[in-house]
Length: 114
Image 1: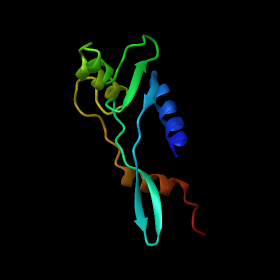
Image 2: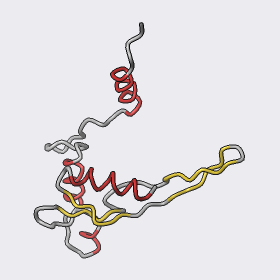
Image 3: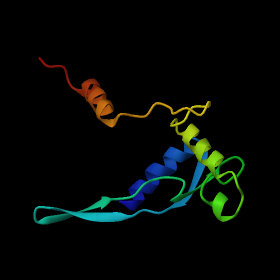
Image 4: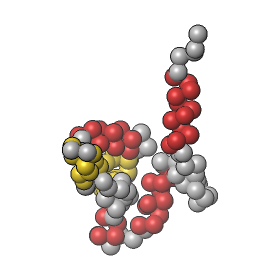
């Protein structure tokens, strides 16, 4: 599971010119009847990742705080802007409504009824 998460996140960040250096994941276990399932039980944020700008090498993560570089808020906002979660004027971007997205996607992929 961790390799799949890594592949997805590397691609997602590479698409917005950010290099994913490393990240942490926490897993949990839930019981489903007699069976246990392993689940991903963590947030994905600049607090739990090391993210560097691909062109400049600028740190866009918690290392800014750890190394006393300053500009943590601006770096986090830059990551959010690139991900489309924050607009250039600082207002929230469009947040994906997963339920609506799945319904829309399902309606596009369903075969026409005969």
